[in-house]
Amino acid sequence: MTTAEATVAALRAHGFDTVYALPGVHNDHLFDAFFKAQEDLRTIHTRHEQGAAYMALGAALATGKPQAYAVVPGPGLLNTGAALLTAFSMNAPVLALIGQIPQGDIGRHLGHLHEIRDQAGILARLVDFSARITAPHEAPALVARAIASMAEGRPGPAALECAMDVWGKAGPVPPAPPLEPIRAPVNDDAVLAAAKRLGAAKAPLIVCGGGAQDAAAEVTELSSMLQAPVLGYRRGRGVLSSRDPLSVTLPLGHELWREGDVVLGIGTRLFTGFTQWGVDRNLVIIRIDADPEEPDRVHKATTALVGDAKPILRRLLDVLPSHNMARQPRRVEMQERQARWSGRLTKLKPQIEILNAIRAELPDDGIFVDEVTQIGFAARLVMPFYKPRTFLSPGYQDNLGWGFATALGAQAARRDVPVLSISGDGGFLYTAAELATAIRHRIPLVTIVFADGAFGNVRRIQEERYGNRLIASDLANPDFVKFAESFGAAAERVRTPDELRKALARGFGRRDGPTLIEMPVGPMPSPWEFIHLPRLRGQ
Image (cartoon, rainbow, N blue to C red; front, side):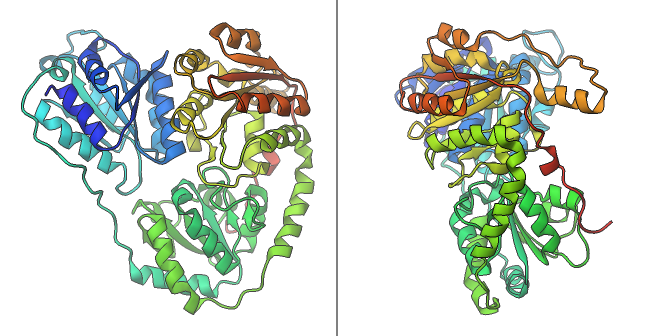
């Protein structure tokens, strides 16, 4: 087998059925191997390298399974850098397959096409595991090691690079079966300590992040057992269904943080609570996290449980009943508190009316892909979500322009459910050319572009904080309907929430290609008073 064929065979052995890619001379042998495997491994090619990487990211977030992309070295790699960085920050299992210049010339700085100084060093700073394949027999084991690394400790991306003259090199290839990831055993002593503290807590609060997405059933059972509210701001949305009155978003979570005596963080950095809301000696912190360094990173946890959330929570649920105090149901109380906050949040009425129209048409298992836009900020606060992995939000990178291509990957991987991308006119044009990819591969993504002719958040800051000195925030836009139609996509323009709802129904009913909906909007009420909340505890 060639190195390329061995790599592709290893991907198939690990269950990969898709690779997102943009070809080039450094990877010609690899793409020939993709061709030979196309009955089992589809190749979705994009119009820009960032599109390939963001699509792999979206597919990984929507499925929870490793996804791969392939691009050339140098500028190809750098064009994917923002997506790979976002995958790292979101703990997403994305495998980058990166070409290289000829093996013997790496590091000689000769000026080869796409040569970049210390590509391996760049990759090592963007991923958890990286290596170079230098011979055919190395490929299966390195693919297995890269994929296993994605599930060990804190999940995250991995990268393999291979020189252009090595991809086509042939030789004997020994089989290398998938590796079982090394997982931390459940620490029964720590579980018991956590159970005693949670069982005695008078006002427990559970905070969920992305690491809780695969433990929704356990979180739901634990919340009920403790009558503990569950805060999910972005990555934790949908872990506890919004239909449960104990499911809260940021503003009410802030209020509950002040009252809490024990906080259980599950797969979350607790960054906002620690750095903005504050901690004092009366607040016990219990952490469940796959990363052994995380529980002590900002504020040392009282009790740390290191490992996957699901088995740890299952063990905690077994132990807790014998230590749990009698609990009064909090359903009525929480409904009343939710109603009070709903009243305060009506300040965001324009955004809420739009989000209500979206929620009315998006099924419970439909996937909503957030963006750095006014509607996105509001969605994090007020839009209900009912299932895990149905709200994709870009984590602490919060990078403008990630949304459309990421949503395209989510829809390519989950053709069984509708996927909705929301973008502002600024963010959409980052990857708008991937409409061609949606057409070529018949991906039925529905996209809403909210057009206000500006980087709206930037413009508001300049208006409010810098004396209306506006600079570099106004935009010249195409006619987005004509733009989409020029690719062959279905497109229409709406102006009211009712019109939007009808357009969404049409879009979700169309499963043979993409739909774009342009919605012109004006300035919207600021959400920041509900996001940047004051310190409550400690100094």
